[in-house]
Length: 363
Image (cartoon, rainbow, N blue to C red):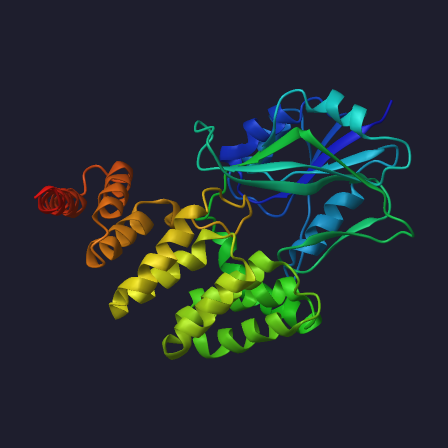
């Protein structure tokens, strides 16, 4: 029988302690390396039966802290589960793990599902993540957005969609303010790390440092390891935002790179609407509306699944005198935002025009 340890680092996580500890109760060991909490995180963990070690990492790096936590796991452990304090395992995970962890396995991917709150079961997005690994042969790399990397000769991975780990992110945590400078360090250490290049460019964009963000995102697109079409498309969308004079060109590249994503189509629709280009607006909305499924990745933009694409499509159809489609899309827009007065007025106008057209045809 395998021995399992669930472990992580913590800093002022009192609000999450009980949920985390209870979800991991079936582990042989629950280990937390506290990095300097000033609330009652340590007291709550101890009361829940979790083994707590106080550590200090200076200068701060997430990879050093996580590697220190991993080093505190007993040597007789077979499988380690890395689980942040804002995450929790779905009940029944232990027998599913034992069934999926075959001899020779070094790591196991399970399904990670993001929620907006603990009480809301609606998944925001999900993807498989390497949350279980062998006690030996692994370490964390990167000072932020740290990745679990294999250091042995041959990595043997398995996966189980039956094991689910949930996360309810607290975006207000003060530690997030350190991400940008740590990403600067990570990029300096490995300029060819495409993932960090993308994230650093994105965060610089959010910080309104466009003069630095654009070259980084362009570099990301040129790196040979930049191969994920959805992320490449997202980088192109970001550049389009920061370079208005080249926006249409970059958005066209974005939709060609990942035509299955709705995001670039909505961006294009907004651009054509601003230009009063009704035919191309109709084209962009038609294509965007056809994309009826989210990709499930962390890049999905919730704004693309609201009323706006139908709203713009209805306006385009009205301008082109395609009144059946204007009414159809106008209604679908209103269904997604029933209290929106403008959408109500637009739909009423479209219906009136449609009836006039029908009356004229009948005559």
